[in-house]
Length: 184
Image 1: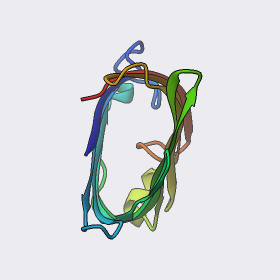
Image 2: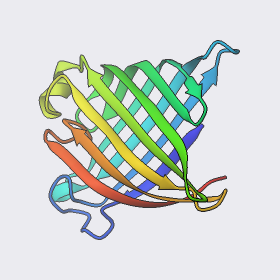
Image 3: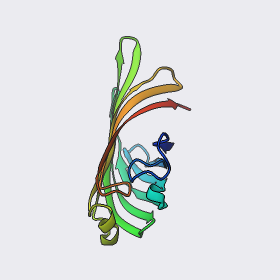
Image 4: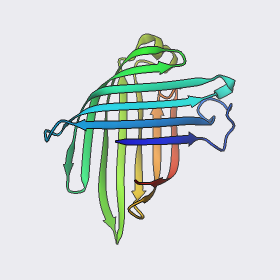
């Protein structure tokens, strides 16, 4: 199980232009392992909420599909394929498919522990109604990050975050994100 809650663009106003307004986002990902096969049932919920230009907006996405885990000494690659259901301000219903992955590599630099990660989601075959307001039938979403595992409970890192025709916008968005995480 993995999850987070973000308060994005906290230094901007709640009603700034699209893409730079304050937003609130959550994500929860679960993989239910199917014995020792490497396969898993993939379940994913994501929501983002904003009020750009004083227009309330939400985009909730629910994925259900199948994944597989490739792992070895210090690295992992976990692809998935899922059906997508969307509940958004302007559209609610089945909304195509998502193919994606999460990948990572743990390594030492001196006596310090680091992790390099990448996650990516490619959406396709979106519903025509949804696609008309979200940049088309396809979208891309992901991040590349370098994490310093300072202690068993504290991790800090820097991410390059990207999204194209995604997150309720019909343009390319990117950002550098600095994070401090507490690991339970």
